[in-house]
Image (cartoon, rainbow, N blue to C red; front, top):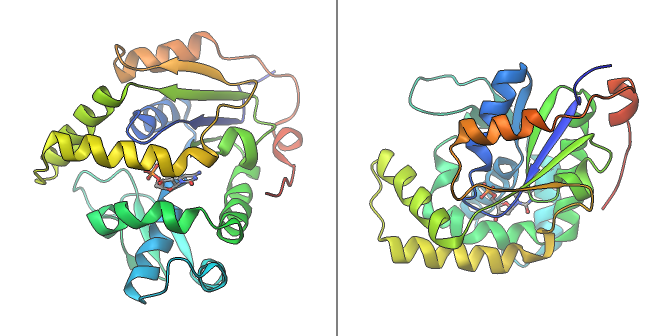
Length: 236
Ligand code: DC
């Protein structure tokens, strides 16, 4: 018997998935993997190369060509991890407003998603991972033993995003952030649904520590071997 080898956390932008995922992974000694960085990294490179963001084939090819790596933090500047594309550190570049604006457009192409999902499944298969995203419980790791769908109201998500940006020295009006998040909800709608066996957690009135406690209280004790559970190869 063991704790679930793969834990998925899905939910809308700004619900607090990364904070929760990182904290939970730290407590369990698991790898924390935020799949959104892969879509962001691809978008950054597509923008730099001035690709047409409606050109599904070009974006799919780019997704297959570039090497995206998520590594241990290389600098103590508040980062949770270091993201490299073909060896270049793009950790902060993928958080730029132009990437925020374009990432939903890039990630909606099925060919792009197939490639990203394939790479994410390779990581998930290794086990002992908390994987965060939108479609992890439904598409990437549908056999995960513990699935969380994290919700929060639009107002609360906007407040949190504003606070995060302030910490990074970025000052954006709350109304603007609220509108951006609402727009992304709209665009990401096609991938945003809880798995039928997901636990729904509303984080509006909970601190990240309370959220972790809530999850640990509901942690199933699993009898199967971790490799067996995660060795599926679901395709989109
Ligand atoms: O979680 P995030 O804001 O960093 O995600 C960036 C974008 O990537 C978001 O607009 C939706 C997309 N995304 C996705 O489609 N599937 C995932 N598993 C993760 C992110």
